[in-house]
Length: 435
Picture 1 (cartoon, rainbow, N blue to C red):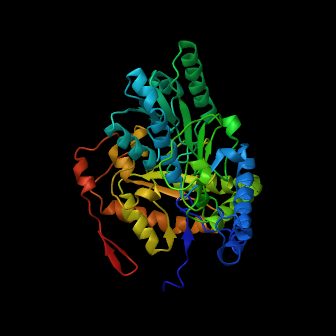
Picture 2: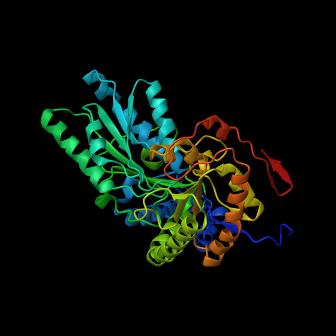
């Protein structure tokens, strides 16, 4: 079958979405016609500034926030960094007065942006604690509460996990943070403690009302909701102090310097507006497809284990471990059949490290290597999933034939785990040989 004749099924919407034509249309005038610098005082500049202001207002309405609480950045990674390092810089003098090191808490299944940022803070002498999760990936709130110290200034738990889709009880965690804040007030401890959440995967599927969720810092991304790449938003609750990370002009409340990218900001706001409008009907459609696919996977392919919470998960997320295979090999075999999926986070797809998320669930190393993520989207149909089920069982069977590992469901280790890591199966895909 030629490349053009091959059927193509895209099931990595958590990694990236195509732009909605309506969002693209909204962006058009700001490329060539209304291209003024929003900082300029003349007419073209005012038009550009009005476009940003309207976009900010539109996004603020979805989040139930004020316009002044929304800051635009170039990505959710930048927004998370601004929240994290900005908060650390802002409390530096408080920590010095307390003669304290400082302490942050992140969940054990956070995106690598938070894990790597926390590692960077550790090098500066700040302590980091990982809040454990249960077998379904839900943060154990009582255990998190026990980790809070007098010098804890930042708690970060993502709204919905990017790999397994598990949805976190943000309101419960926010209550823990509020109680800690009140106790400090009564004790005369002036060190602030802020609750941050990365909601990049949640936007378009879950309620984004920051008042109900109780978050202080909240990040959403355009590229996950059929908007343009290269733009995200950070909600900073009024009264929360963070210091800038990028210096230059006075843009974005002097917290994020640099000329605003007007077209993508406009497209982002339009995409979020559309996603919110479609949320109810699209969630219902995706839930039906998701559960149909999960049932077929777990009943038709032996030794298949669903990862993440069976109910409290994103409506488009299916993450499963197929015992005795390497996930990377399966991705390449499926790609050769026109099926695009991932082994987990798109941001770490170039590495062969096992998923820290699956390990955090208490699963063995081999489970992490055999996990695959399927994420559905607006174009996904039942026929697409049926096509995957025509191809996937034979791919799994083929990989198991060449695997040195033979695990059973419930087995927590193998005698020689190094054999699995060195399997090195060759996969021929589209004229190339992968090892």
